[in-house]
Length: 208
Image (cartoon, rainbow, N blue to C red; front, side, top):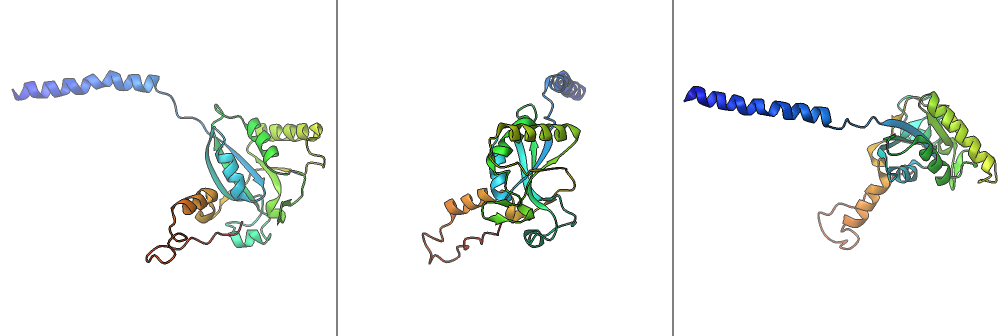
């Protein structure tokens, strides 16, 4: 009886073998994500814009394009590092092309104002494309020329195109900033019940 039981268990386990191999054979491989890095003024809004594009799988804000290692927000904000406020994007090229991201990049900010977007002024707010590999470099240069030729913007395009170097992520408080703000706005009870004890105050928003 004991031997019969062991054989029965072995038979059950072996029966899963072909199913597992079939799953490996027929299962879809995980997407090979590519990286794009853009600078377009304050990185809060830039990240919020790109993270909503179908095919964009991950985003994070940070600093790149400068010379200071491990830059802190305060020194970058004062323009002492040479870095630009940037967004690093992981995207699935089977769902969204790099060219489409370039198209959206040139539409979502003003690429004609040097070191400035709106009221945010300084080299940390410059318009820049940091390419990953020669293919992205060629696409970025070609698309910039296309936009220039189209006269969609009346002034000359000043967007910098440079090789992507080390990307230094910003502090957690800056990541998915607009999502955090919306969460606070919709869940906090401080404003509705200002005298309620043990309610955490609304977090202070960091400067962009």
